[in-house]
Length: 300
Image 1 (tube, one colour):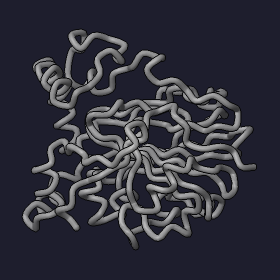
Image 2 (cartoon, one colour):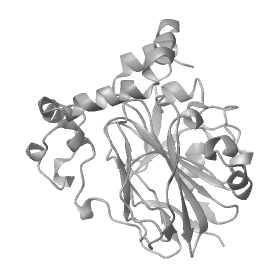
Image 3 (cartoon, one colour):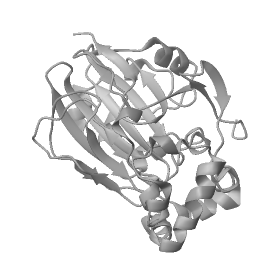
Image 4 (cartoon, rainbow, N blue to C red):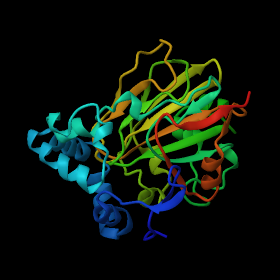
């Protein structure tokens, strides 16, 4: 299982594709080899390792990595709000803004949208799922939220896991209109959130540093949004104003360098996910789709 390629369904091409994994050799060594797992426990999961790497990506010389990265991963520079030559370092490029027209927001008061670019798994009843990235591998809501009361409130609800690769647009947005409260930090490790790691141990997601925000939505009821840090993510930056109404698709924050993850939770019976997300997720296959595209519709 560990040597399997990572495959996902591309919503736009309507086909299953194999992911090109950034840093694949290192990732497979760290999570699939005994010596690598020792290195992982002693060094890689710790904050100072990621902070050091983030510091390297803030150096001016790191800007030399930008054009080769764009070419290697075929990024569409026409989407960028700024020219690739305007970034002072790689980290600035990494959390770049896009032109508003590059990510149109699906219309409709009863339509929820994807909070980030990435590869998504959707579970309409989280307690009934047979596993997340592989069959039999699940975590509890209480472990994820670090809050027994919130876990009871959202028990049996719907969950979306949105995994961002290093090549993706790394800002996250509100999936529904509503009023967000203050974000709550849960400190933790910084494991990778790649399926290479999560197929081996799904609990990395609930052991990592994360931030939880409650959104009071008139149409969808209370919604929880979690940003999960990961290896080489320098920081999770919240850019929104708490206790002020936010529009659907409005920017909430950004991740600095590295792969990362956003998890969105709905109460039971409040959303009906799009069929392609559900069909692929039943087979533990992620769906690639972009921020602002349709996530589902209100069902209450």
